[in-house]
Image 1: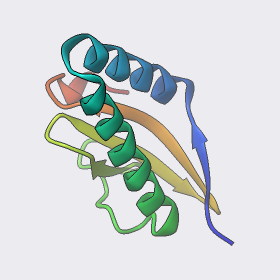
Image 2 (image 1 turned 180 degrees about the vertical axis):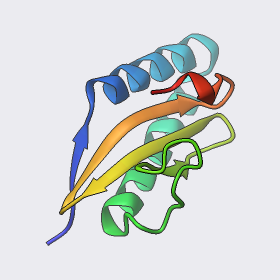
Image 3 (image 1 turned 30 degrees about the vertical axis):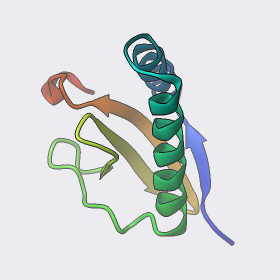
Image 4 (image 1 turned 60 degrees about the horizontal axis):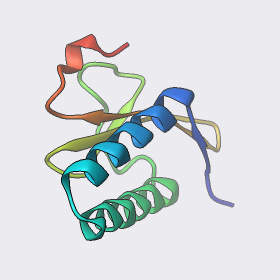
Length: 97
């Protein structure tokens, strides 16, 4: 049995903001490519959550770089993966809690 994925409110909000920004500034094709890459990365995390490194800024979290622009931060507990947030890399990581 695999890990179960849980989205925090913050990670859902982050995703909505990213998709809104992409749809304003890019074509529908780029938006769909982002969604596809995100889905593939989440599948990797679910199958092997320990393959990505521990975050230097928050040791309870792991970080999976999705692109130059976006990093996924998540926590593994028991048989569950909790998405903490999707970080837009141009923002200061020091401000995250």
